[in-house]
Length: 114
Image 1 (spheres, rainbow, N blue to C red):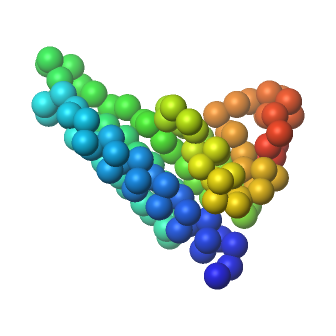
Image 2: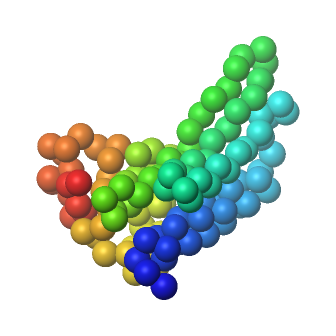
């Protein structure tokens, strides 16, 4: 399996597992957990949407995309972190970009800058 196909499969697997675990904990009524996996555009997002107490809820839990053959983690509100899961699955640090940090801050991490 080529690198990009492997990355796509890993991202889908990890996000699906996280979403399934989270779905076992009840959300406020009217708020749905949504997993959107777009392989064609390499965009992967897990978010919550709906209404609770007359307030519109829209919250991104995880947003990951593949760009320039690297995995860009744009948003990650999981406890352990998607990067940790990707490392466990064998993705090298140089192929993971913590894009929720500024480019200057990324230079201070062990991961790719871009």
